[in-house]
Length: 358
Image (cartoon, rainbow, N blue to C red):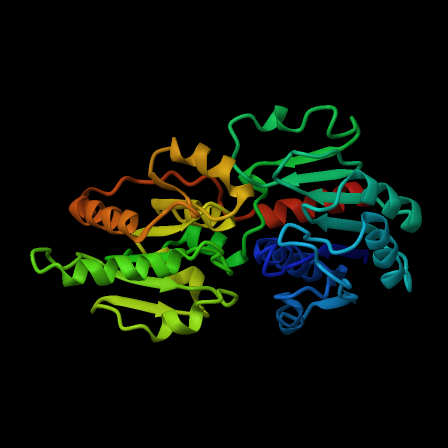
């Protein structure tokens, strides 16, 4: 049995995507018999309690004395973070350190390797900074994956796990991909756990406006809007008066299954875009974070996608137009070819076990 530590954060500024995919990896590693410790800093909007609820061990790094801005995702220097991370897992040997954090780079990775004497696996999708690691995972679909991480970003010994074949999706997606349920006349909308650009509110305003237009026929589908647990507007949205056929909820215990039954989706261009593709669900994309822009632009050119643009520029009128277009073409929806079978986490664990044991 190996001891694997995972350095990852969630916060109002960072969002929930990093911790969500690390929950998947941690659970899969535990199921394979490994001991896993999540290392998370006490930041506003963290999901440390959720990690505990999922049966994961968490070592908590102290809250920073002050966060300079919404782009100050770390709160401390990389050297301090590496020292604190090493100290909190030093009670037993660490066989592998996984890091999923945009604010950390080769300097942090070198320090961890020196202090703990273990290899480092980096999870990244920006390809905008150098890494010094044994493994690199980028699960996103890119047009030129093999050249995305040039020699100046990685050393020649790094083993790269690239593309949606290695996407860290919950096990339910593999099962739903293999045996999909019947589709319903339903659209599901989810714009990440924090919805930083307020897309849920814009969509609610759009359906309310359409309902007031007496000349418009009722939409030929139901609409389920999932606000996300860390959406600051969630309470007001869930209490809002919405037209018949529209539901607004904070979260769903069976989100994966509900998504699989939908014929269409609205959503962010992050990990949920990969989830929707695994299930073959065409969608309208919105970029709600800077790191999603390149992926959104790429997917926009693929069959089965519509792209509304960056969330800071979208308006409720854009959603009203998108809903009207969707209603007019509801019975001619395109098919979306799946880019993954949902078994990426299994492949990642198998690759790590192969290299760590040889």
